[in-house]
Image (cartoon, rainbow, N blue to C red):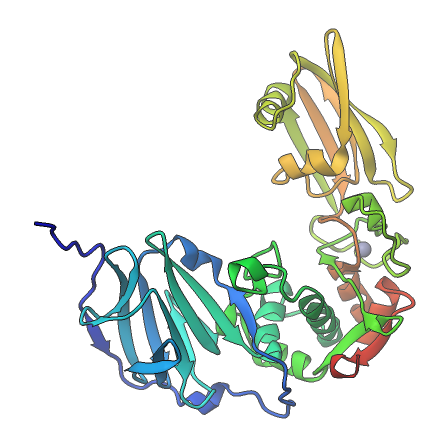
Length: 391
Ligand SMILES: [Zn+2]
């Protein structure tokens, strides 16, 4: 006889008092649009087989668009997986492979494993793990992105600039992960999104003060990027991602505003043996490394190619590839290097790829009283400000 196995079942329902009224969190003074909700993959849930949900406001539990249950305001629910393939909430409610949690009024908040989020939630079981996708409105999403991608104490105009660029990035990258069922992830492979936990009044105000605003080039959404600091010179997009297409507004230029960035200058040391181990794992073949050289620089001061040497051989590789393998050590490709005994020593500038908005530069410009529009025009010349609904 086959035994039925509960892989993870949690029984408890905790009653928690004093949940704040949902309306407390609702956006004010912003336009609602007809755009579909964004779908954001909550990547931390992808490794989980148990979730703790706490509802602020009530949610309908939908299976195939039909209401099958309710998550009640103020209650906590333990969610597990039944027989490896179905969502079970609080033991007795076994649902399907996929459920949808839909807020009853639209202003609800759901806490998932300690992080609060706006919007609705699609929960699926895949190979005995959860996949949670947060469905929410663009401007609500931006609160949780700008709050995570910028330092809250920074000047208001810097935060407004970040809001416009994050909105432009989002709309330009819709469907980036369509095959996985979402638009963007919540981590640095898209934009870091921290839900309501990342928000503050100042962040919400900065997003609201730019509501709907994006930048465009030739009446099309601009292709935008941002990073921490450029080290004194931004970079051409082609020099980083080796794409053929050039963008008039993504060309390297001097930046005099990010000198106060904490990693404006950085140093690193890598042992030859460590480099060999990592590169061999990536499929490169070599002898015992005895030297690393810079072969060519770009005009910006970023390294274009390096060469790896050993007795009787050498090969060269793109500095961007090399940095990707050692990204924890190398903050950018803007570096000079020295070989000493068994190691190579780097002295570098800037943090990030250098394409588009220099965040510390934007902060430096705000400190000099420049507006968010002037900041954006500096880093994305020739672009225009538009309402995305008019594009
Ligand atoms: Zn800069």
